[in-house]
Image (tube, rainbow, N blue to C red; front, top):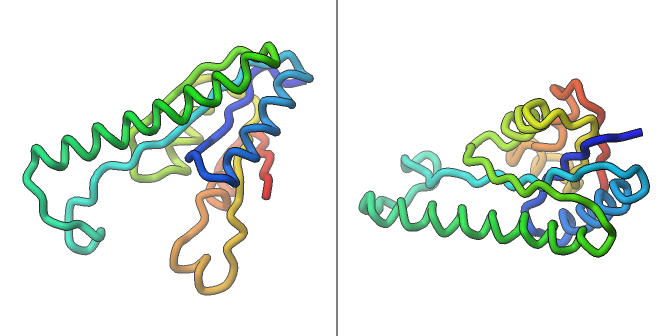
Length: 147
């Protein structure tokens, strides 16, 4: 049914649940799993929530975030190995998670995207947005959303 499943993870409890489901689905289908973590860049302006820092501190912070992202996708690989699922760990640096996720799914020829939804509603959803909603709206690849 599925050959390559992309699972988006940020290491949160909810995304770990989506990851567990993706691993089981990949095992059932004999599919390869692409574990994706999107690493944000450090905010550059006051309006983005930035605290002015010297460029070397910004580079250090971004490097720490990238390393945390690599650790997250490597943990998916470690969790999938006992189930016999081949995992390709991927980290991408981007501010727009939904666009990065869709682009990665196309690049890696995924035929399913698995991700979690935090289930925000009302004003919180309007203010914070919904990456899941953006992926559902713009992806041409099927999306499995878990809560």
